[in-house]
Image (cartoon, rainbow, N blue to C red):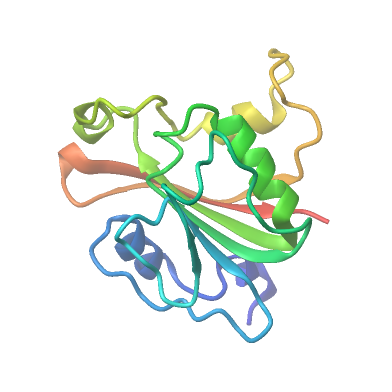
Length: 173
């Protein structure tokens, strides 16, 4: 595999889009010995991943029930906009991911109708959200100690009213 594309393993952008847009939930295939999590899975289960969701797991009240640096991939499709404290959940993801592990995130883009249609949406995201969170010197709200670098970070849509932000964060060593 081309080293410049290793952050995309084991799937391509089209597959990521299909999964994040809830159109097709492919089997990403967790290789033997790897742990893949699907946060906020609901009824949309991803084969090869372990689902964590209500009522058994509440991101606002529980840590991710895995040890430090034990998880290879986390899928977080349409959950961060719903949680009370997304910074806490991102910290938990960072804690359990192995170095080089990926956090795949899909959230409604702030300009889309889909961001505002659901009264359970508590947070809004732009293409600058991750850069601001992980590196902004202007805020004193949990910005220290981040080990994520931004890989993929693009806006895609099924149609104009359903713009989504697709992001892949990679935990650095």
